Image 1 (tube, rainbow, N blue to C red):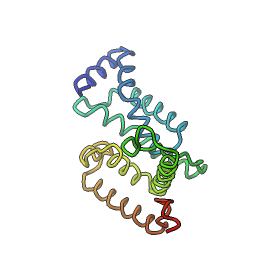
Image 2: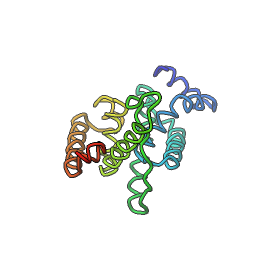
Image 3: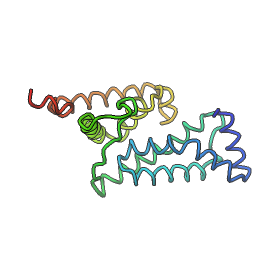
Image 4: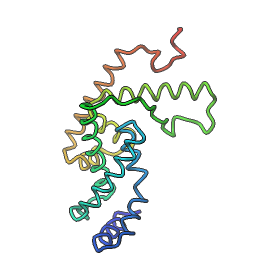
Length: 195
């Protein structure tokens, strides 16, 4: 999937071919959902946010710059929508905790029950740490450390400078370190609780 083929599908969509946009949805639905889920920590809300991101992209397709990465443009729409939802959420309700699924690199194919329980506890703890960050910091952390985007890609996506992204990440890491200092070691590894 190249930027050129994405641009061709965008042009076909603008020319009235609905199936071309459907192909873009198929290409990027997993990426968009993963981002919305990491930001919102609620499967149902993440599905709604992902769908809304695609609707907004479709409605604003004529504003898409064909020289930019479509994926980056689409993820920026999704991330901005998630930040709006998080701001509204703070005013209206407290979310029920839904554990963060483990990153594929952190699990083996068949974890044992104890390993699975420890992994789940760590994931819940990491998600709690992320939930305590401001939406802007959380988004920067997710894009950098989960998706492995470069500072330049994140800056383009969020329409800011690389130095602003570096600053957000620095402050986010400080906030995470402060939270870790305030929590006992056993929160990260319950096996150490008795030692």
